[in-house]
Image (cartoon, rainbow, N blue to C red; front, side, top):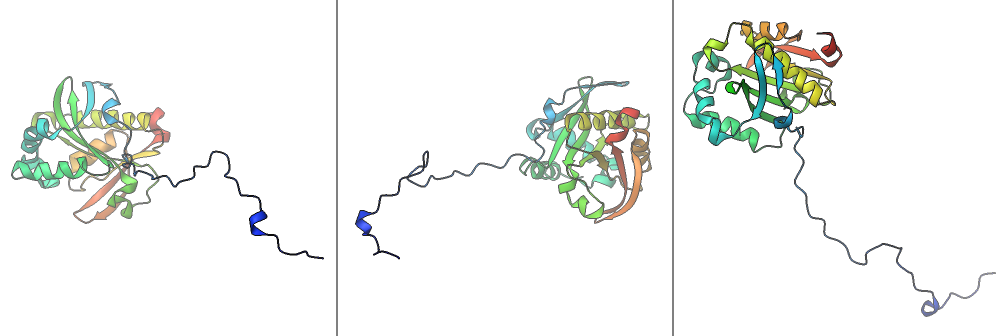
Amino acid sequence: MQGEPADPAARPRRTRRPGRHPVRLRHHRQPPAPVMSDHIGDWGPARTPAGLFRLVPVRIERDLPLLSRWMNDPAVAVYWELSGPSAVTAGHLRAQLAGDGRSVPCLGVLDGTPMSYWEVYRADLDPLARHYPALPHDTGLHVLIGAAGDRGRGLGSVLLRAVADLALARRPVSPRVVAEPDLRNIPSVTAFLNAGFRFSAEVDLPTKRAALMVRDRSLRHLM
């Protein structure tokens, strides 16, 4: 048998749970963590047959004159399409430096001398991922050798192998390193092959037909 409804005034007061704050806290939005949060500048040097090699993240105020000069070399400009005033190269760099960190532009420094330009990026978050079966945390590489005298003598292969090894060692979440050189750029494709990358497929990208090159982690210790 149910009794009369209890007097609301006689009900025991509900107590707060231990540790619960009586007012709503304001949550301050934290800036997003960089997508490539692997601190490439701290990857350290790699000893190669050509000398001691290191990736140094780009600083526009320091590096723009050199990079703009390289981009205006006709042999580079045909593939990178960044020739012209230095503002063209600066815009390309700023788009990466002001972004979410998914691509990090770097100078390649050999025995203390800047001699190449690299972009280390999250290939699985790049438009490239629409054109191949990307895996989470795939590491992508773009590279150019700056001085004409450093090209055509096997140096590209030596450095590609070193950077791929660094990426796989310093990014343990990354299953592999990928690249997509222009199919017309036979010296570049050959350099990747000689650096332990395998040809995976031809892919049609918006600006070129490319060779998809892959360096698998499983092969790292077999090279």
